[in-house]
Length: 257
Image (cartoon, rainbow, N blue to C red; front, side, top):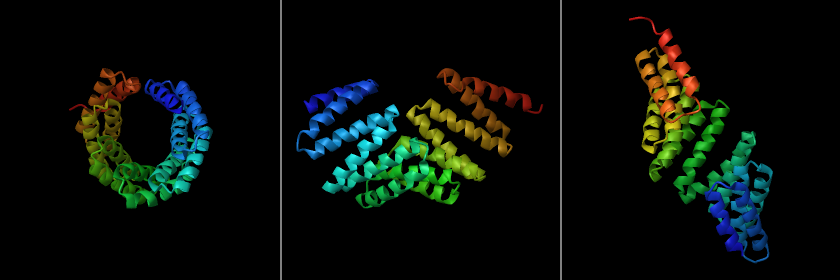
């Protein structure tokens, strides 16, 4: 019966029906507890934790992940332990206590580095960079984001490159280092275009327009804002009204030639 519940849960999850997926995984967990297969129980608990995290039930998600971690440490599955530690760190970020995520992330880093799991390392370095940026530790944040980019390139993760270039650009921007910020935002934009991710491209171009305004390159800033408004209009982005106002204000403030 456990496999049937897991199959149903995957279908519900694919459909975005989180409540039904949660119920199905809870039933799978109950069945797996009656068996002696700790690996199956760990998988079911992990999936239940993921659904709870998506649903916003962070307390139950944490309980699931901690039980999973206990099983994984008993079985000494280093790779699985690392991924669960990352999940626990992500919960801390989601709960608004990102400073508590750092120990989980660092322990996961110690486990993943010798395993050469570059896909996981790219995500983990990105997360660590975000935490350093929140602390306004610009140099450390830049180091982590750069390592994340290296890992994303190894596995060819367009999404990872787009997101990390965007965050590295924002780090440079917040630190007042405008030229590296410009380069990162342009790189991020190119990767978002490859992904067909209009919201991501628009978000980066808004920041890039800010960079150009700060360096008094109004031509480039105007092009960015016009592209943003096109994307917002064409894809009906929620920022449409704000983007329309931004471009209007830009034109009003442009001195006559």
